[in-house]
Length: 330
Image 1 (cartoon, rainbow, N blue to C red):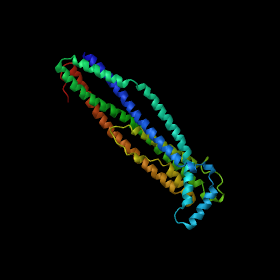
Image 2: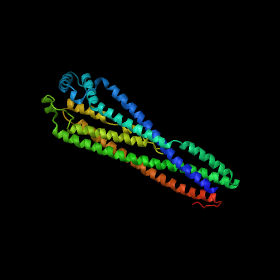
Image 3: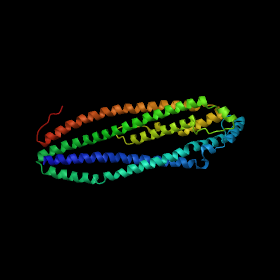
Image 4: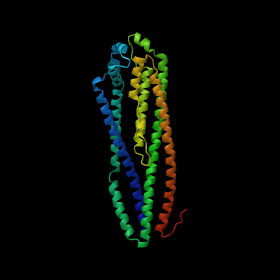
């Protein structure tokens, strides 16, 4: 009978591990759905002013902004409308592609739920079977077994959660490292653009050529998009973590701010300056964010090791109770 109980607990442990993974995947689906809805709202907000970057009337924008600046100290309404057009032209297409990726990710995760079907029912049946088995054991031993088993169950659940937390945080750290790398690349491309792209000559040349196609500025925009993408992937992992909290307002993407400051640099400053400062600041923030998560990962490692030791001691004690022996705990 003792062997039967051991077998039941082993099968129940397997069910618990799988169900914990399912719970985390459900959190990811909820995160992805919320993100899709936010991005959809973003694209809708720019529907009225969206057109391709190559289709924007740059000469008209430059002339009107110059006229407006003669009578206004601060950027005027035409500048603000044109900046919105520029942001839409630079971001909406990328955001739509992002939504497609997120939808595919969501569908892929949902398809995995089939592998978890029947586990909750199986766990319930195993629990019933365990209760029946305990009823057939001598009352004194049954009482000790129940107490030791419950204590082990709580520790096992915590250990499962901490183990899964570690997996999620490790994945997030990888994505946050990529986030830093992409931003550093964006800074390098902007530095190259600053040395090669003369805004005044571009204006004097009646805005010939595109700002983004096959250019350092275009590559910088792609790098910022890649940074945003990895930031979201890190968030998708961290929303699953049970035993640690993260402030997600520190995970703001920067693509819209990037495009807004780029527009201001071109049509107000006449040179690339603020955009470089913004990206450098973003690099500092991303490094600090990575360091913060790495620090929490170390704390998580210590908690996991502590729980692992308690789990082993309880497992030994549980085995001793099943054999009717006392096991000395340190």
